[in-house]
Image (cartoon, rainbow, N blue to C red):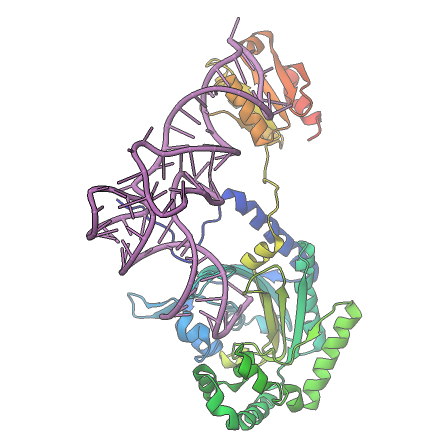
Length: 418
RNA sequence: GUGGGUGUAGCUCAGCUGGUUAGAGCACCUGGUUGUGGCCCAGGAGGCCGUGGGUUCAAGUCCCAUCACUCACCCCA
């Protein structure tokens, strides 16, 4: 009988790692609270159509990476591969815009994409992110970017770089698409098959190419900023100056076009030098057309998503072991067992972390365990202690040991410092 | 979907040009202390050498296939 393994690209988060996740999640929630963002949770799966419409049929996500199936009732469903579309769907469905002119939402969630796994890329992975609806003004762009940086700085990430661009309004994108096509038409025969494909369907994404000879060709390509409307330019300039005012440094990245269809104007990406080929820990931008595309009232919005696995990778290993018991109760013999349990329970109810042996092992083994677990104190309970009414309390860091009356034990332990 | 790398103990890895009982360190367990941890010492447990086939007197070692893991491409968090 062969044992069953986890699915490729998924991973178990064992206790030696889960405390790191908890710390990251706590830092995220803390920062979100200070910036005034509230959590939203959406279902693990949605109608496939939501992503087809919201993300775009021609995107890699929709065209080849979704886990989709038809359920027993004949509905086409998909495990969510990204969260902006589901959050926008919930925003529309619950008329959140009607109850408040702006909504600042965040999430921490698991996503699913069927790609070949590699360092920093998994088939089930986790993102935190925000979606801010209702304002088209640059100050929300700047706040969202500042928020992302605040989380990363808060968990001690360094070696980050923020890349910033604007892909303009839809009108600008149309103009630029034409300009880019005109420029590239003479070079068409020198382009790769995928680039030729994109030439037809989504010319902006050709800027993403990593093929050296294509990068060479694109060096002289028109810049999207050439097609900005005056409003686009004003908007982008103000985002930049607000970031300047907050002391957040960034690099202009004229070729940064996000892959998903819904983006407009501001786009940004944060990369870390601590990662491998998949070095983006955060990507986001403005999506002023998305809500309307999904059937809601025209509503501006901006958000980002950040990869938690990548953040944890970039943070590197820390050596803290998580939760260590304050006290380890060493029980000797059968008769003290009720006393050990009763004592542990009462100390725990007083807020202390208490552990005891459940394998009926020798005293030596129990002491070793107390040490290994990182307990600050050991309480030794045997027949002698039961009879005399005094337990031995040992400070495991100094080795000092003293007798404490059982009646006073609880208050005594509470008075110690941990 | 495509390419590279790697599969030997729970973990990190040795195992030379095929040669007889497959090793180390760490971790784990027991003892050295009739009821006292860390350090030290002694001992122990733990391997169909990823799987299947082939070559050979002989395969962890060579060949083929297959699977898994991993890194990278495409693309993204």
